[in-house]
Each structure stands twice: as C-alpha cells, then as structure tokens.
Length: 248
View 1: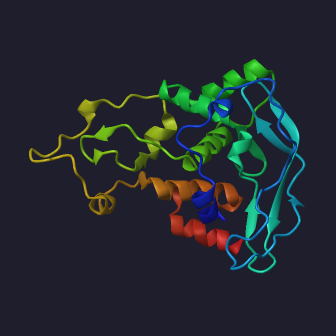
View 2: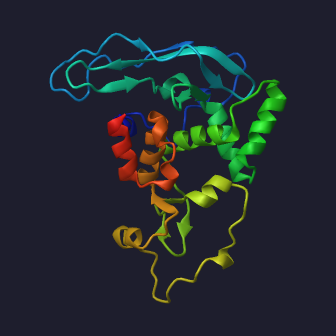
View 3: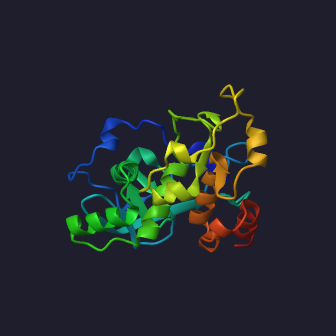
C-alpha cells in the first residue's frame, strides 16, 4: 500500500489557493471513502469490495478546531488482497494514520512555523490556546506533518556547497528540530576543483546515519503510519520496517 500511495497520491508542490487558505466555513465530510473502484494492481477490471469502516472516532485537526467522530473507510481487492485507504488531498485533507487527519492549511502552517524556527510543540500549544481544545501530542502532530511532507512534491530552490545543486536529501535531525540555525561556517569547504556536481550514488555510499534520500524517508514515514508496529522506524532500517509490515 505504501508504494501505491507514494506513486499515486502525492500532493503537488503548489496547492490550489482554495486548499491553501484556511476557512472557518469549510465543512468536512464525516464519512471518508477511498475513490478507487477497481483494483489498480490486478489486470482487467477487478472491482473492489464495499467500503469497510475503520473507526468512527477519527479526528480532523484544523487551525481553529478539532472535528470529532469522523469515519474513514477502506476497500480491498478479493483477488490480490490489496487494501486501499482514504488519501484524497483534493478534499483538503491529509490522512495520517486513519485516526488522525490534518487539513491542508494546518500542514502548511506547521511548515511555515518551522521555517521561522518555531518548534512543533510550540505550534501545538498555540493551537490549543486558540481552539480551547486538547490536541494530540506534539510528537503525533509532528509525525502527521512529516507524513504530509513525504507525500508532497517539492520544488527545491537551494544548493549545497558540499553536495551540489538541489540535493534530494533531508537531514532528519535538523528537520525535526526546525528551530535552530545552521551556519555556513559549520560546513566543510568543498574541494578547490569542485564544480557543483555530485554523483548521487557516491554520496549515498558515504552519507551519515541521519541522512536519507527523499524517497527512503518518504517510505519510512508512510510505513510508520500504515503499520503502528513500525513506529520505531527511526531506529530500524527500511528493510526491517517492511518485514514488520508483511507480518502484520
């Protein structure tokens, strides 16, 4: 399921304006059903099952309130056993783990707050003070946000003096903190003959333990949400997380 979601459910780098701007008038559906009707893996037109209720106690987190008693559904293929869950960003929602959903304006707000060096825990405090409701833990909100970023196309506009133009790498430690400066003076100087190019294969062979390619990090985040037992993916290899999912 993670591979299918990563291939077919990615959000564009630039969202339509009506999905980016928050509005207190937006009324989200409380019954969230996957749009797929036919299996995307089996040859021919193999119909999926009727929607199956996952829970009726899911929550939608927004900037101004929490929408309770939401019912996400899933569908399955009787032939290959593939499961399809609700992941329709065009509705203005991002499904993290079928229990917690974030509306897109909230995801963008968290991104903007991180870019001005405000930790997610402070963002959650702000949301609770504004709405008067208790939000999930900051760690849960953070993982929901990272799940959103893992499913978002990114048009990178930066260049690394050590790794070249637009390196497809996220350093998890700094990405998680999101509130600390990294001075250019802290980076090692490139070789004198460095021309801005870097072979990705060579870099991956010498990457630090906390650095992952964008696709690897995206898969880790998706697997963590799809399989609660894989929530410890930060201490495990991607292959170990996949094996745990197969046994679930």
